[in-house]
Amino acid sequence: MAARQYTAWLGLQSHPPRTGAAYVAVRVVVYIVALALMVLVYGTKERGLVIAPPVALVGAVATWYLLGDTPADARRRVLLSAGVGLLLGELTWAFGYWNVAALVGGAALWFGFYVLSGVVEHGASLNLDRRIAIEYALVALIGALVILVVVRPWSP
Image (tube, rainbow, N blue to C red; front, side):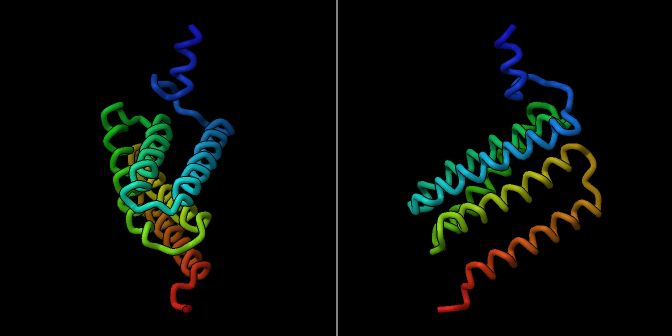
């Protein structure tokens, strides 16, 4: 019995979608853990070949878990989360050449994860409309501008 509850909690078994405070709490915990792991991995300052797979794995697993609250079947969850992980791995590879503090690089990767997983989750929930797409596009634009202001690549 305990094993069944544990696998349901991990999202390995289907469960009714979370709502309300549980929905928000799960997302906050997943986002905080993902941010911490991405900052730790990016902070090693290893080559992109070394840091991209762990960041991709974190993004894929976190997205897979978040997709547990959508009506997407297991195969679609895996494909969507693998796509987010692949894109994050590519982004990590590019950011590997960026000479910034670990917190800035990790936060930029997390920000990419947030936007990608959010769009994928809304798409899997079948409620991705123009308003939500514009909202995520504006969040991505504002976040990119904030990162550019913090990093100031135009200054010597």
